[in-house]
Length: 142
Image (cartoon, rainbow, N blue to C red; front, side):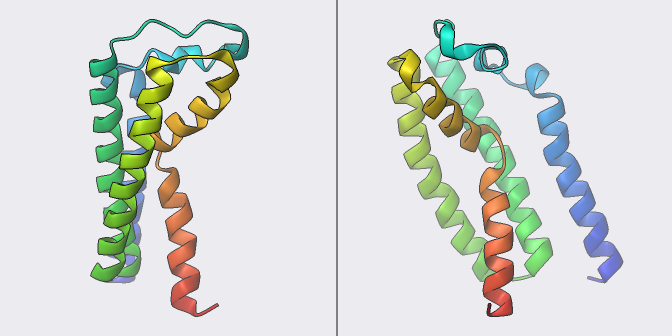
């Protein structure tokens, strides 16, 4: 793959991540989107359907993960990096979804900030922002 094709693919893949974010209210059930936009530290947790919320949060995580793995592959052209990243994403999902479900089923105002950040790792491609520079510097030998 030439340099031009690589940049086109990266642009398209990052564009897909942006589209997921742009249309999040239309694509996914998430009552916490509006909750965390307000002064949530002083509000009660919104009513939600736990199964539906977990399904759509997991779906969003899978979509972001798939696109992120494609970005890592296009960027590095190394299947071992993608395999290791899959392991990180799977372990991360297992840990984060358990914590997410705990905070959804046991909402307490003093835990909202921690819940907000755990939820952020599930619905946004933050792990990609950690992996890209980590693999880049590992490859450079720095």
